[in-house]
Image 1 (spheres, rainbow, N blue to C red):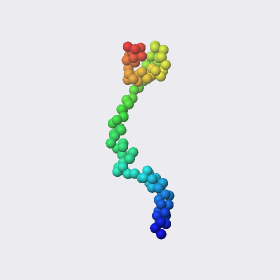
Image 2: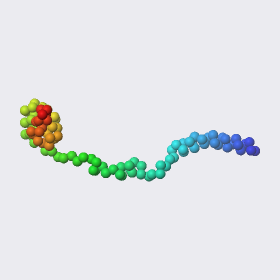
Image 3: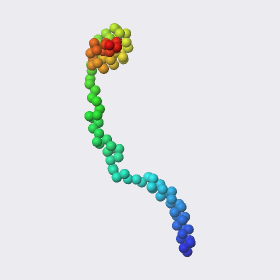
Image 4: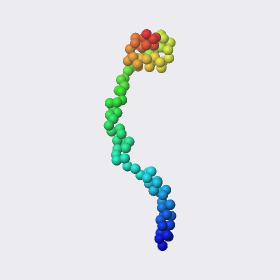
Length: 97
């Protein structure tokens, strides 16, 4: 009877090996329940993001620079925003001074 019991145990173990290995792979506990949600808890995202200031671009300034320097609207508008709407500084930066 001992031989039969040993053979039965081997058969049972043979079929359960894959399940046991799968349990080892899928079951883990790192001891922290924070996960992804906990990762950002220490970061203050509002302070990290730079606050964008609002720059008003006057249409007459935009048109004047476009006409004088013969540049596209997108480029002139971006330069005006970079220079806080200052026409003189924008003209200097676009001309390379």
